[in-house]
Length: 249
Image (cartoon, rainbow, N blue to C red; front, side, top):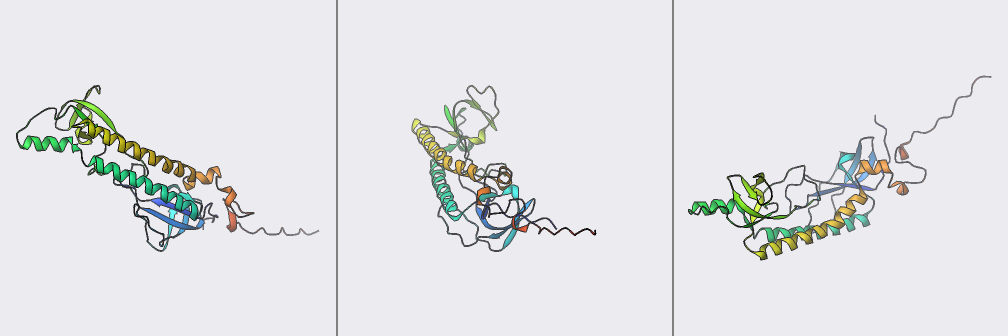
């Protein structure tokens, strides 16, 4: 049986796999029961107060989770502060999504034009690269990250690629670009992106301070919250010392 450890924080939480760039992942929080060298046993906190902008898991029961996938959460107060920051970030992502929804995806606009016999190449002189709303992202995407943005002058396009002035190649996927048909479209998109990036700042700072469980265990950032006389390594599960037997005279 693996040696049991005292958890370094009262709670842990973890995000589900993120699939959309404009929607933050579902969060699960658990009350720490005990640890092993590689895992934490938690009681799932299924009665958490919801936030309209966020999705929280309300599954009941107990689970064993590997430490490297968990984020530390020291208290209820910090949890509420973290949710407030995440909610503000999600509001900003929603606003950015609304603006991106008004842009024409370059590849779709090309297909629509060709169906009516318009073979213009390029379709527009300026284009914006930002993650399309309908494009699914994969597991490598960071849980708290946001899409990048770039504006470029279009030279021409092929079936699957787009040539941007100064890029020197056709390596830009046409499916990642949107037509920029007016200066107002760029102004609105850039402003919404800047607002979302600003809202991400407190979230990134908070996540960095909380830390992944496996990292925090190594740097001892939560040592001051341990019970007196207990260490993160063994804590209350430390084996009792046995008295040495007296040797015969």
